Image (cartoon, rainbow, N blue to C red; front, side, top):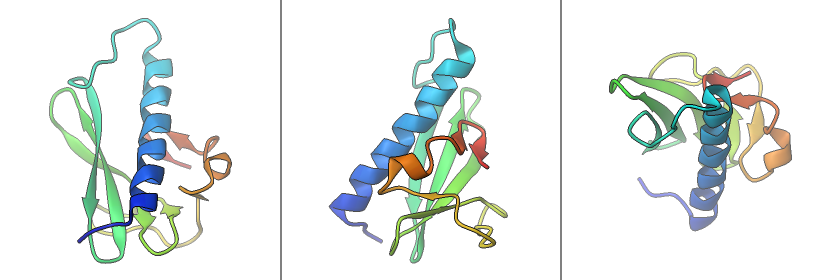
Length: 105
């Protein structure tokens, strides 16, 4: 399943915010890609944002609606919690204070 170039660019911005928060968490420890990473898995309605630890364990960070760019918290590995929107990837100000490397609040 493909995504638009605009959404792909916005997802990179989201990834940058997540990785920057992780770097702030570690402060003085080297934060190279092999210690923490973010990947995107595209489904029919959502893009799953997956965080990968240095040991290789994977967890769902959040979901992004492909049609609107809305950020949703993960309810499980396969589904978002649709109770309310946590922000929108096209408006970084809407999520900058809600996104942490551990997930969205």
